[in-house]
Length: 320
Image (cartoon, rainbow, N blue to C red; front, top):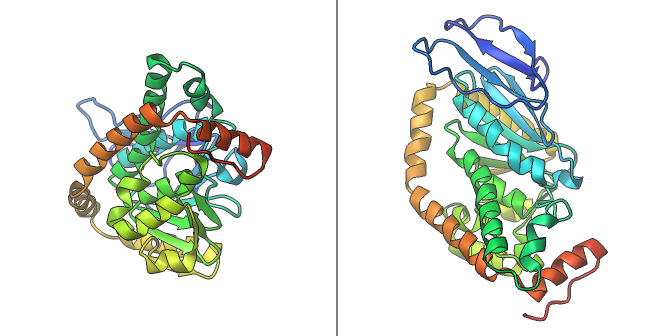
């Protein structure tokens, strides 16, 4: 994004002036600053850190959030789950941001959960005699990850995803939480958790029924199959397919600019009203699936699935 103020700077808006902003280099590792709670509410600052798993750029009321890894294929490791809600809460609170574009760096949107990086989440749960403590810790971790993606859904600013290449598992959870999805012709999608002995628990099973319908979702969830961009468009998973990655990203920005030209409070009101239709149903479903997985996820099949990933071979499931 030419001319964008990158994420290593603090963007200040003081006393309501919308003129040139002063860029201040911020300390690495600092977080987003909330709106001032002082009586004078005209001062506002948002700090975007040197993120490890994202870059954030803003220009003309549109922010672009780009997944950057560090895992292969923008796989979602600990940095991703920690930083995602910080970024979207900061953008939600920034009055200069009216729409957000979400995309991935490189050829792929995301390979989904970074299993090697997140193996510590499953290890204690799979140990012999995994009683209440490791199950409770796992439950807490799943709900923290759910909250990370829910921060995207709860952002008052419309979010538009531009997807290229693979969008697998957690990547599908993420785009299910946005408002509008565009794809390049090479995009492929997979709700693959069943193939790795996991019940999808970060939001796909709860948000996708309202996007693609129950029948399409059940087929994807039960089989773990891959679908291409053309089918994704036919079933309503994406709004439109474009020839390549650049065209999909350009279209996302064009729509974001069109949204940003409208009255921001009205746009936010429309999103809020639409979200209320399913909010309680999604929240209840997320709590249920996290408890289900904490209780029933440990299995020989899950151990086999994780080992197969590390050994780069097909898993052999035995149903126990």
